[in-house]
Length: 102
Image (cartoon, rainbow, N blue to C red; front, side, top):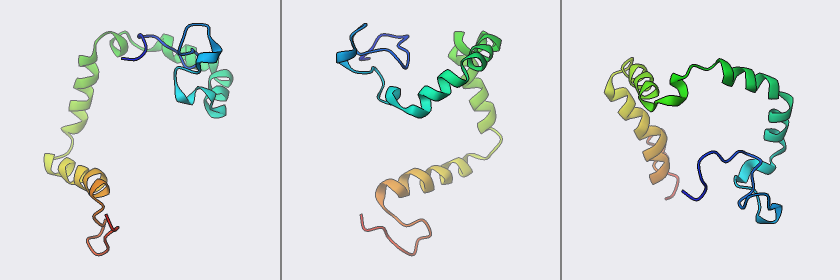
């Protein structure tokens, strides 16, 4: 890891040194700045209402993902990966008729 755990969106690469640049590339984004300033109270409320399981153990999140994935057969997930990622990476066409030239 380049940065220690706990860096926030408005932290600098070097502590309290604006000349070092933002820790995260999106820190200068007007969209994220407005989101964090406009909805600061709402974000705080959601984080305080979140259950401890959300942050204390990754196993709960893994279990939720596994439960979601069990809703569909494995072959559907394989086809989804093939179409979204493998075809896009290799440059093969989406409908098997036109190639993208890669």
